[in-house]
Length: 84
Image (tube, rainbow, N blue to C red; front, side, top):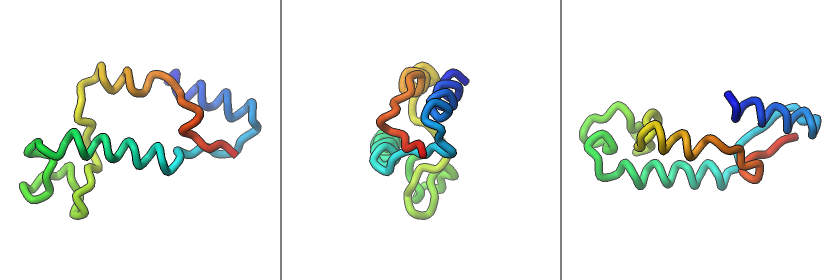
């Protein structure tokens, strides 16, 4: 919730109507997810994993624990966001 409130405050300050993640940030995140899940049984479409779509993209699961997710998402990196 803190992350959302910080982004909304920044949007208000900039008088932005929308916010989106930069393409580079999205690409970097997906690469990290795919790299961390590639060697796990649930990280492969060929094994029947429902977490991986037919293109081999992990669409549903974060490969770390709650603490690592919290550390990764607790601070807003405005350089990775586009607000207009």
